[in-house]
Length: 374
Image (cartoon, rainbow, N blue to C red; front, side, top):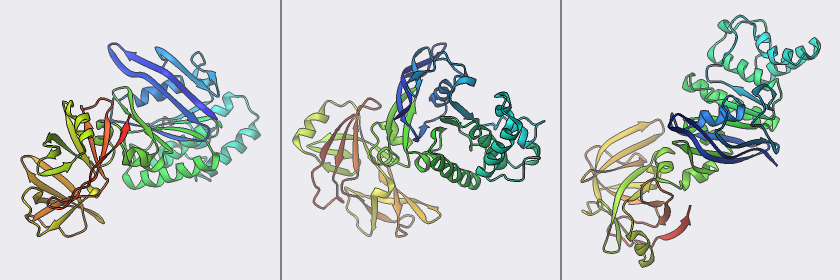
């Protein structure tokens, strides 16, 4: 069932389209992340769902009923803010109980509900403390409990972990996902952190300049980004400008043979880019094949993972996930893994994507095949 539906929603601030023609259906119990850079419109979209902003056009429905004229306090939503927004003069109990007291529930009911919420977020026994006596992570748990105690149909979270340190962020997002699954709670989570989105979401909505670039499961958005922007924003991606040369796609020394029909399809493109994930490229030290070799310019150690930056010449560089073989200053052949190369045409427009098959230069190259259009 569809719990939340946004249909052609737009919001302008002066001449700026904060959100433009935004449409999205969210299933009951689904965890959806709105992901994008600062200023892309994701928080504005969330605030419109909550009722804190009114769309200039379009409709927002919860369980099939329009909420456009429903005030925030009467919507079946609850929101967790980035700043926690706790009342410093109230105890933990008072902060969590505030919304229930506005509903004029019996005192015993309020106490029972607050106790349950504290247990759910792991704060049992802290009901008499004040926000100033809590750590940042504990304050965020209180903010979450304050929203959960209202039993909303839709939980809204606006970058709730952005002010916390990395270790605590990981811990709290794992706890949040466990709570969401346990309650089967429809959740909309705003973040600019791609790792958070890839970890938490059932589906990711990639946003840019107020519009949706792509909607899909984390694996789909990562493995097959549908626009050049999505390719550049999700994960680490090598993006190389390319051109057509004698039936081949050429990006520096990298050469990819293409079929005649793909050659024709790409011939009118004003821009071509090859997109390659670092984990889809390998290096083979000792090979010195001129048309696909480069020099190891830098080795970056990221814990168990190493990235080698390969200078291919003429301004072309590749980040390669290295298994410990590359060394600074060494000559190395770049080998693109079969089936993992993406080719985009014409910049940030809806793009045709070609999934190519490649091999190290000097070896046989298999033909790429088209995988469709957006």
